[in-house]
Image 1 (cartoon, rainbow, N blue to C red):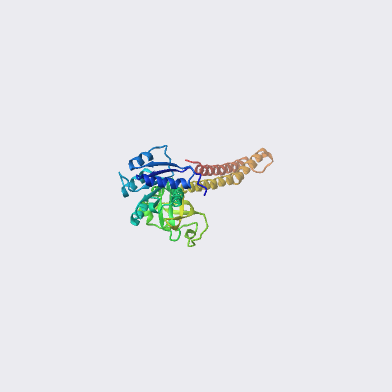
Image 2 (image 1 turned 90 degrees about the vertical axis):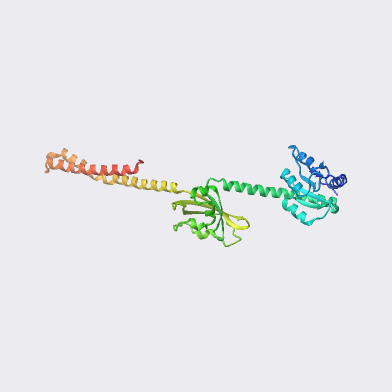
Length: 336
């Protein structure tokens, strides 16, 4: 049989020379060029694991050593070999202790009398790969936790079927004013006012096979002080603690909306001013210009100069009122 060419780095912690030699021989039967380190006491193993240059793939640990044994040994080895799978070896079968050691974090529990080269190699490969997968999951969960809890925007997780809030980040607690306990006692619709511009029922999912990845919504939310804010939400589906859930990001757009409304009001006033300038102002101005032309032709008119001047004055006053109205409207448009 062709041996595994991967250069595994293996630490065997075993105080019995015969058992060490047997384990070493089994490994060489299955692995082409392993690097095998040996420690006969916990102190030696601790010293080996403390060296930064030692990058191990797996540790085979006899759980009964001269200077430490049992649960105490396992706990100490786990603390010193974070990220490295530890396969416990024992000379006697103790099911309860085997289960206990696995619950503590040991990767596997093998009986020395049942060992074979294939059995040992299978355990080595399986536990190394399982440790990699477990580490990848833990890294992913840590990144999610950091993205969730350190996000500067309010975020929460809710149950897709009941809308019960399941988790909430620090930004939501700070922005809304509720404590975490108060948030977790609420359902999603407890945050909303009655003025919902997007159907909230869309956020309740009774279909376990839902394939929609995300939803966008615009809502009005209550803060704890009952202040109403406008929020834009983005929701993504996920599984949280084994249940169908969703992650919602809520962005407060109250100030932005107020600014847009102010701009729209300003634009309406500007349109009014433009209409006044293009229509209302032209009437008295046209009359004045016409009356001035009449003065130039005064000798040929039946109207007296006094009558024409009176009409000009009336048009001037009318124009003055219009200009004052424009100024008043403009003052409302210009920022204070």
